Image 1: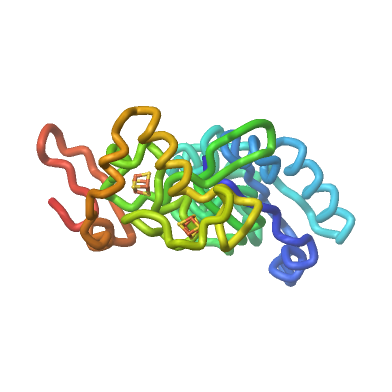
Image 2: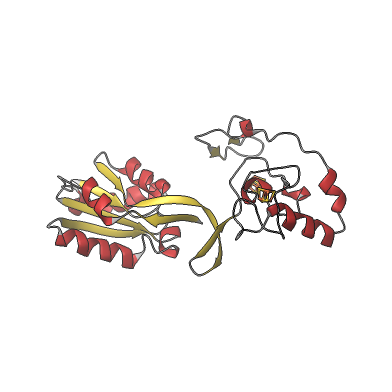
Length: 225
Ligand code: SF4
Ligand code: SF4
């Protein structure tokens, strides 16, 4: 799930200066779960913009905000309402904002700051556990990612600053390598701690990444075709 936070309303209002007819799009997936762009947040934003004297001409919670075809379909179906809008305010992650970008030539304004891919630990409690490095190594680390969960992204064991199982960067955070060692021990695979991993090859993923399914063995991912 993409974790975002709401931009301060003053910042949104500043971005919307000079625009009077606004479309607001939320997202039924991540932005709803993170309470940044679900039905309540869209209704709240609409009310605030109307207080500012703006006219909100159309609102919609796109089922999956980053689904470009779906966003295009919705805007096509609502062309009478959105046709004379001045701008689009998007309450979702940057992918959702750019799905709207792909669907209209008008001004598109982000209403949220996207933060990370987060696991849902409980309601409104999210933790980053994978940063999409493009070549997963956690088969050797007890399915715990040192690249993401070690504050220094170390791939060959702890830094030496570990204290009572906590990270020297933040004593409230578990040291990833302490967790990894404990898990490998449970699995009887502590020997994996001595394995020397090569420096992480960040070249396997490039931005913008793309994955196009062109059938078996013909996928395009990152630099590989
Ligand atoms: S090694 Fe870590 S960052 Fe890379 S893909 Fe695996 S879990 Fe994600
Ligand atoms: S204390 Fe642990 S998690 Fe923190 S930087 Fe060092 S190895 Fe990484």
